[in-house]
Structure formats: C-alpha cells, structure tokens
Amino acid sequence: MEEGRRESINIKVCDMKRILGIILFLFSFCLSSLGVEITEVTDLSKIHKKAAEAKKFVAQKGMNQDWCILIDFSYNLFTKRMFIYDLKNGKIIETALVSHGVGGGSDADNVVFSNVNGSGCSSEGKYRLGIRSYSKFGVHYHYKMHGLESTNSNAYKRYIVLHSYEYAYCDNPTTASLGCPVICDDMMIYLDKKIKASSNKSILLWIFK
Image (cartoon, rainbow, N blue to C red):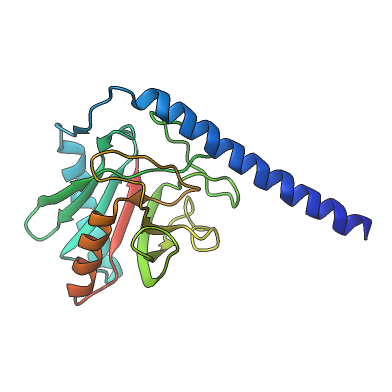
C-alpha cells in the first residue's frame, strides 16, 4: 500500500513538473514573441541536401518516393521550418510553422532533443507516418509517427504524433508540445488531403538540426 502511494505521488510530481514546464515555456514564448515577425528560410541548400538523402532513403525502404516532410529545428519557432518537398521534381511545395517539444530546457530559440519517455522533448531522426487516428486537438485527427532510428525509437510508445492545434495559427505559432510536431489546422488539412491522394501512404517525416 505504501509503495503504491509513493508511486502515485511520484506520478503526480512528474505531471506537475510537465505542466510547470509548459507554463514557463509559454510565458517565455509570449515575452519573446512580442514584435517578432514570421520569417522564411532563405538559404535552402541544406534542405535540398537533406532531400537528396531522403530520396535515396525512401527508395531503399520502399516508402513514398513522390514527396516527404522535412523539419529543420535549427531555426527558431518563428521561422517556417517545415518543408513539404517534391522528391520527383526536386523542389519545395509548401513551407509552414511547426512547434516543438517543451522539455529539456527547450525554448522558442533552441530545441533540445531526447528519446526518453516523459522527457517532453522532440526527437531527431527519420519517421514513417502511420495510420490516421482521432485527435482531441485541432481538426480532430492525427497521424501516428514511427521512429526509424535509435534517436527516435520510442516515438510510438511516447504517443508522438503529427497533429494540429486550434490555437496554433498559420501565421503565428502559439503553442508548445510534449514532443509532437504541431502545425496549424489549415496545414493539417492540406497534408491530410495529400496523404489520402498518395498511392503509397508510407510517408517520410525527417526532423533534424
């Protein structure tokens, strides 16, 4: 009984720490967002290089070779750092804002990666998008994410998914997450249509810095 009580207390403490972390993140975000303009990445050489690597990877793994999703977390929260990439024609189709995990001391300008359950961090590496499922956030559906590398192998167990959030606006990121890449509703609807229209729904999503 005593052990059960201790375990319950530990879980509550962990939950409180997570909530406090999110509050602090949002507070620092609100301060840092004053007067900040949304920017586009101008030097796209890194993105094109990653896309060339992605093209080889999906061919080897039997994944969708038409397009993929690249997320460069070396840029801050106010930069359109998600890239929908046309692998066949070697060009960027769309860019979007995307939020990152609140854990590990991450803030609006810096992303700390972790693969540890309960860390609240984003995890770097390549993912395969899985099934479409119900979400209580945003447009009420998300896509499961399966980590394909040692740096993100716990993603599915951590409930890391691609989803939208009703308070994440397409021209202003207003949310943090516990590790999920969070986008605005309009971008989620766009991706959902694109995935549904793809004959091979095994889509690569790659997070890096």
